[in-house]
Image (cartoon, rainbow, N blue to C red; front, side):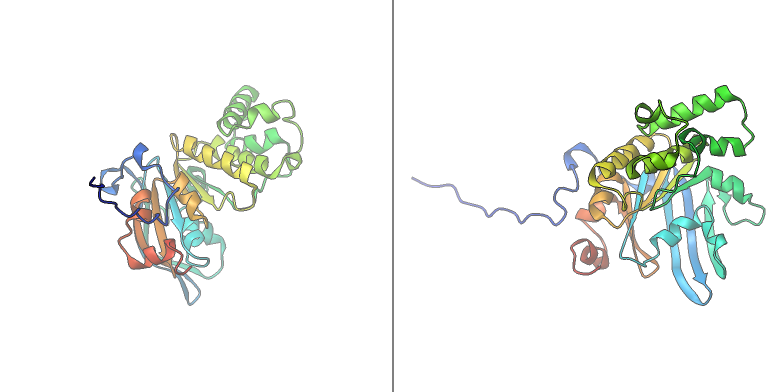
Length: 282
């Protein structure tokens, strides 16, 4: 009896488990509406060049992840989008960033308004030393909103959006520091979205959290992209694979590759990208 020819099993992919390819198509930047456009951006701290001629387009209402080894410029680039780097002495910027066609670094740009439009959440949860309610209402009060009914509505809506309402609705006047680390981070995200930004910047938002809290934040990111353009810096490639639509790999201040996340991890165009995601260096 003739036995069918045997075929060796394919080697497991280095990125197996990152994607459910059957449930999504490869996306193309060429077919996306663009929220942020970066052209030839370089940033200097004094004489030190931290970003080197970075150009990329960030699509609207998608999640874009920035990956790369420590010190490669990921967080520095993220802070350029809402000009947080302005707070650092000796910073100098070359190139441009356009937010829906408006120059972020134009001398007439209202930086306070820019930071309303481009919210930011940092690595370590940083609630204000106020009540849970006042943390969420803080940005609205700065904008002059005083009507209690409006504040109540926005606080409830924002806390529901981050899945926190049922956990805190009976203690809104309690101190925010009484929340767990994961709850505090979700509260900070609620505070950021309460003023309805166009873009949400997340700088390693789960690196200080336990796995359960991390999973909740990742689920939240997937839900929030229906309303916001999201940029996330992460040191965790598995996280980038789970939450992002597009991924940018950076090294030594340069943007090496930027593409659909599944395509970048499974079919990188640059050898430097392949070396990093397969663990040859980084």
